[in-house]
Image (cartoon, rainbow, N blue to C red; front, side, top):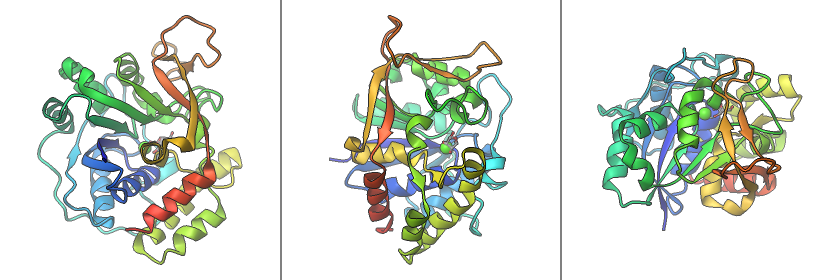
Length: 312
Ligand code: RIB
Ligand code: CA
């Protein structure tokens, strides 16, 4: 029985691979809709990129919605230095022809959670949490109807990738993250601690190219482009596939291991703004509110990813 999910996203090359993995896995996930949010690049680009990816997967019936174009309280910070000006730099891409839905993404999230059976929908945020938090503020009763939130964001042992203390998705909208982490919804977190172990090394990229499909070629060209930032900054052996970890968890949770801990979000200090303060060692009595992942079977992850992408 596949899980009903909403993917909330700011494509971004790694978001694109996550969306492809989900659309290639109908026996595991039923994508009710894709909601775009401002993040890696501004909203006009993230909603366009989400449609480009759906068309690449040949899944033009998946409804794509545009959501919030700025964080709750702060000026938007984007990441063109990582993802390029379009957000999907690497290959040449044609404009999408599938339509954008008229309904606002936040209204789609609220309506879906109100109409689907309680506890049947999983939210999969892959970018800043602005859409999710806005939905919870506008319709507080829907939080109790969410099965689980599985999100990419935060860091503890890996510390920050946009500031010394904060990971990008949380840093862009820390107030939104604070609302989500205090919502009481069961949360599974894919932080940099685990996504930095999902590196697209040369053999993996060669495996994408060896598929001989448009999808394989696109993913190889996206990861070739996307890895520059992390190779230069961390000297890593490839691009960290952050967002696909969320979808891989839904398909094969045993690939991941972590710990139930308390996670709170810094929203006051400019020095540590957006930091996910995870009580990994249980030194406080704060309530445990998140499964915080720390380790990954990287070979199993790439085996799953390659097998599924080859279906498209
Ligand atoms: O810090 C990594 C996260 O920020 C990923 O989701 C990437 O797509 C960007 O949104
Ligand atoms: Ca993302």
